[in-house]
Length: 337
Image (cartoon, rainbow, N blue to C red; front, side):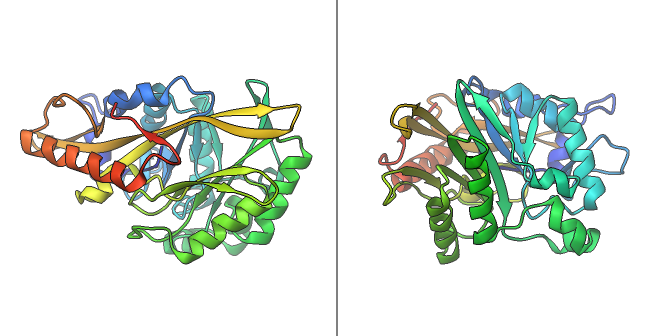
């Protein structure tokens, strides 16, 4: 899925009468699309904390978000974004600790140079998979909260040479499939920029098999790139917003869940994409008294979701059609629900 950005209103929406937090209902309508996969990834643009560090919002969310993501089927949280260092290396450490306590893996943020340089490969259904994450920028708050030395190891900032070395190291460690998670581009980009296209091409040439982009709040196109060496590389330039309270613009609240079914042929040493589909999603919001409530629903839903007005439902269905028209069926097929 795309990126999750928890502002103060979203954090408040999960606060219960006993002072605890629960966000599980937000993800429930799309958990069927996320759960059941060998590897299910969402990007967190921000940090997690158990509440000991202070108030929530401003890219810091309660640890209950990790429970909700886990319950929805996510098993890997990408942390490699411009906002991971907003609360310094202590924020990275707290976030990693929260995820580990919930048995969630993470990528893209590290607590030591040794950890950052490790090249872990995991076996998934008999296939050896390597995952690496990059961001092309660090926020002003992150640059202030972390020293240059800390930024050097705590998050991997993209450059073509480093990425090529990382991918090569993963291959040397036995990776048969390499997945790159890239936080790039600008917030308002409606299509991949020239710089993003160049970065994607460099990653593909370096040996990436799957490139999943976040950063822009809009969903961008996808493609299967045919490489000179015979490989097929799947690129999703931007998965858009999966959950945010930052905007009610249609493009910002329309996201997607992307499903890739891959097969590794050990005899020919080749990877193929068997079944690829995407489900457009919609960030639904309504009021319960003075409190905003949120839910992520399939944008192509054939029935009116509970608490959604008829006019919003019409807008959501138009959004679904616009996104499927934009993305087409060549790289992946649309699914309404």
